[in-house]
Length: 365
Image 1 (cartoon, rainbow, N blue to C red):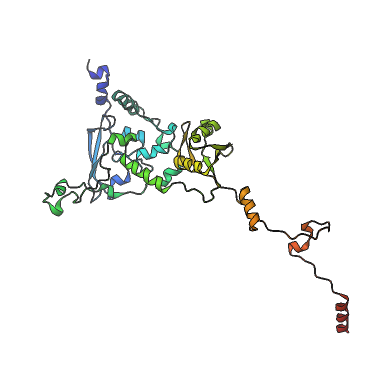
Image 2 (image 1 turned 30 degrees about the horizontal axis):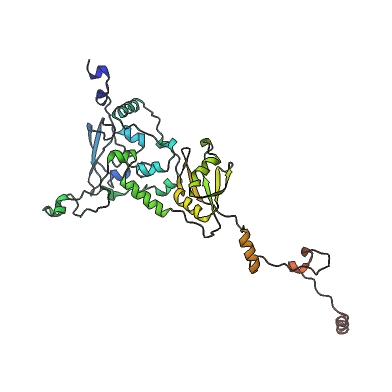
């Protein structure tokens, strides 16, 4: 029997070809022109991820943009919730590596990298009308909301740089469809579609994460007596105990105490020294703490209003700037300060003397 009768692995690509009527693309890749003319070619190319034939779409992204085409099939795009052209997340407009960094291990979808595993999973997803996809149902992480790029960025659709212009041999002038610019060595040109899809070794993602680390770095409070870090977003189902938190922070220095607040799903870690707390905040600050597969938020704890350390209180009392001396009643009077009306500013009117009363009577006569 032939390949179709035996259902062997080498015949899977020929059996499960994709048929689509419209591509899964982001607004940036469509371009700024509201009227787009697309070229559709069934089984026109091989998916760069699963290596299965799919329906190829090609169009011009705007009046000044270059021609674009889909590079992965729709099954692979749905599994990762990404654009078929730029492989960016459809909800946040970010690379897969940036999005997966702020998600827990339970929310990530691991895909097989072997040929047999990719064919098996692709065949199951194509036969299942409603696959159990996870990325479309994710809870929006606060850091992802800050880094999201929802507005279209049409400069990404610019034409490629003319290689003949770089060599100095282009004779087309203004009629050349390519850009006459010198290339910039920014390390973003060496990109692999498969690495970008799986979220590994993506230079664009590394650049975004580096900028985010510089922009959203935790600022240490001015009060040097604060040595406590706040840990939020503790999921009760993750079964995170005090021992897990201690194991995650004990490498930065000696820990004074750990307080778990189950009602608020948070915890407080107090270090013995400010230097240890700053090291922990620099390493685990933001959303860089993962315990039992759950990603937690780490920030500096805010001191209570009006609360002062014992040393600060003693110093302030000695200087007379923090503790105000209250006017007390005369010694031996047997009254406490609140009984003295002078303290409240309600002093009684002084009684007139006998001479003053006599003068007042003479005036009235």
